[in-house]
Image 1 (cartoon, rainbow, N blue to C red):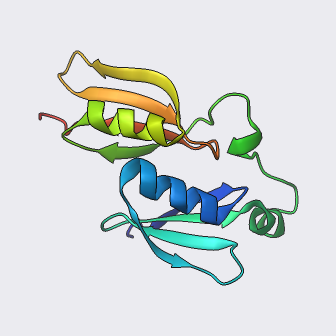
Image 2: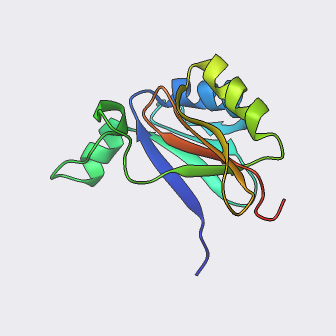
Length: 130
């Protein structure tokens, strides 16, 4: 078994790709002509976005849309960086909402949380032991 990808269902795939480029510096790898699916270049594991319409076709009994939830969903995307403060500021400047500013945890790791315009919860953190 190998972890291959994460798909985040969003209202507008192109807007989410553009936001993640501005906020976190990732590049778009692929955007389907239909605009309903796209991928970012993020390293070994692919981060993908799909339109809520695709979720509706995959889950006939519905799904919880992060973009419609007043609170962040109980899952997050974690991005590791040596400059949490700078990454946090860049994400907020790009349109993310600050949930928790950069904070040093008891084990020495610096961690912050932002919520993207599409509702996605992102943790920005320094490497463990770094």
